[in-house]
Each structure stands twice: as C-alpha cells, then as structure tokens.
Picture (cartoon, rainbow, N blue to C red):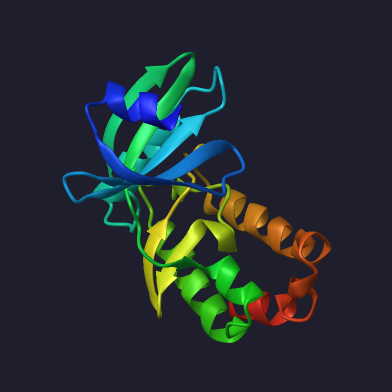
Amino acid sequence: MIASVLDRLAMRATRTERMSGYDAQVWRAELADGRTVAVRILRRGVSSHEEIAALRLAGRCGHPVPGVIATTEHDGYDVVVLTWCPGRTIGDLLVEGGDPDRLGRVFGLAQAALHSPLDDRGHVLCHLDYQPFNVLVDGDVVTGIVDWPNARVDDPRADLAWTRVVLAFAPALLPQFASIGGRFEAAW
C-alpha cells in the first residue's frame, strides 16, 4: 500500500521502512528528492482532520512537531505525509538504560512548553497521548512530539492526568519501567 500512496502523491521513494505505530501504519520513506518523510496511514474510516489541525496549531506555536507535507485518501484510509523528526523516543532510551532523571526533566519541560495558554480561560493545546514513546530527542533537545490524533484545546490538567495514568501503568506494560518509573515520574 505504501508504494501506491506515494505514487498517488507523485513522491518516488528510494527506500521505505515500516515503523511502530499503535493507531496508524507509520512508514519512514526516503524520497528520490533527498527528503525523508513519515507517512501515517490511519485506520479505515478515521479522519485526519483534527490531527492535522492540532499539528498545524502546535507548529504555529513553535512546538517541535512534524510539519504536514501532504494529505490524501487511499481506499478509505486517510493518509498524512509529514516531515521526519530525527532522534530517538524517550521511551526507547529509557528501555535501553537511559538516565530517567535527565530524560524525565526533558519530557516534563517539553510538556510544560505545550501548556502555554492559548486564551484568557487558560486553555492550552493538550496532546492527550503525551507519553515517552511519542517524544523524540537528540541529547537534551526535543526534536519531535508525534502522534496527535487525540489532541484538543482544553484545560492542561486533562493532559497531565492522561500522562500520569500512562506512567502509572507503564511498569505493567513494560517491566523495564518498574525500576525506573518512579525516578522518571519524579523528574517529570
């Protein structure tokens, strides 16, 4: 399917690689023109409109998010082509033994930056899936916050509560987090 999608958009790939993704097929594609892009193929019938709006708002606010290059529909699937964010996810680094104190601080500072007020009621851009596998870093620099289909403008406590729940359940899902989760969460 990835070849058909890229052909439809007149993008010729020299190499494609399937990446992990929970709510969408995610592909890394190296294009003939030298660009590397991410291609998100959403589940059949799932609209990309809200995710695209959230990405564009986050980008306008100066947050490190992938830029929207192109969108299309292919056989009932919405497809979004995004700029590629370099780096590694904080989750992967934690699993591999990265410093939970340092990574927790980087993770927390990036979420705090997302929560800059957008209106006089204190509403902010809430990611609502802000967790270590959706934040990419290069050293201490956040290079990308990805996976925005749940985002909305809301009270920041909604975003913080969701992140707290994910971090509380992380050790049950990934046993490696059992020994570091408390340190990471405290630093966050």
